[in-house]
Amino acid sequence: MYEAVAAYPDGDSTVSRHARTAADYGYDGVVVRTRGAEFDGEAISDRYGSDVVTGIEIDADDPESAAGAVGNFRSDCTVLLVRGGTNKLNRYAVETDRVDVLTRPMAGDGDINHVLAKAAKTHSVHIEFDLGPVLRASGGQRVQAIKTLRKLREIVAQYDAPFVVSVNADSHRQLRAPRELRAVGEQIGFTADQITAGLDAWGEIAARNRERMDDDFVEPGVRRGREGG
Amino acid sequence: MKHLPKHLRPRWRYLAVEIEATPTAEFDRGDFQRALWYAAGNLLGDAGSADADLTVYAFDFADGSGEAVVRARHGETDAARAAVACVDSVADHEVGLVVCGISGTVRACEESYLGDGTPLSTEQHVTFADDSRPAICRDDLAEISMPDGFVAATKLDTH
Image (cartoon, rainbow over all chains, first blue to last red):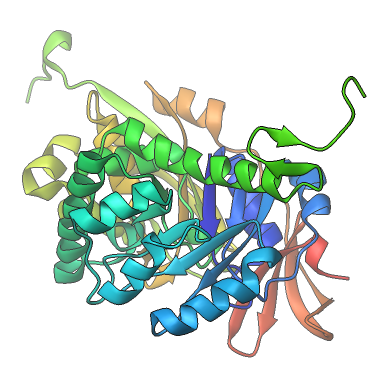
């Protein structure tokens, strides 16, 4: 199970602190959303036993600038995320094979419908369930967040679209252990298995992309090398 | 009033909760209890909150780190766990909470999951982001004082 976090300078905790807390809580590793974060993944993994996956979350105003950023950063990171929040950005993200995850699709004016869910499945773009507002917002905002999560869950389940779960932590104090997330998820209508699957999906994306970025990888099922060598 | 026969007494479970906050955060048991009730009331509703019946028993917090024992009704531990997860701040201080374990008695709870003894924190200067900055260090953790608040780091980030 992995969690995707925003680290210093975008967040209040460094990558190593996130990784240490995540390891304590029982995660296998963290996906770093922040492009400017500096860290030594190997040293962190040696010390705390937590895998660190390089990711970049693209926060663009429109699909055109998002497309530019996807082209620029795809090869720099293992997991590429595009922040949604408008219908145009959501649509761009789920229809782009090079994007791994569409984050916060329901934030702001964003919405997801059956067309986008089917596109996400076709292009294997994971849709994020953002539990952050459930844990940290209150009042009307939280009601709204739980309401939109329910809508998203129903559509995603109907079309079997790939999904991930995250709490969008800016600091290590905002992280919560997988068992806690399962308990919260069950209170707002998820099944425990859905939450676990969503946390596991980060690791599956990272493993798949690492294999693809390997020098010996030619295409799925084809690897360079000598027979028996 | 005469106490209830044993089979009619409510059965309880005790959650061992670890608390983490910024080194300057100060709050007491009452603040934590209030935050917990507020979180439970909002997430579970009045009925669910009454069922879970969350009460803070032992509470110990100093220098940004602490622990608590939270009592919940037997059979409501999942709801209690969810309510604990939804406590994001206590007395306006952001807190990280994790349930380390659940026991049937306060004593077992404390002995099994709590009281590892937090190492003392020291103040020292560390090099971070190309500058020497004051930091509060504990174990291999460092809370580095930056112009706009603390940055939580580890010894791996500092020199």
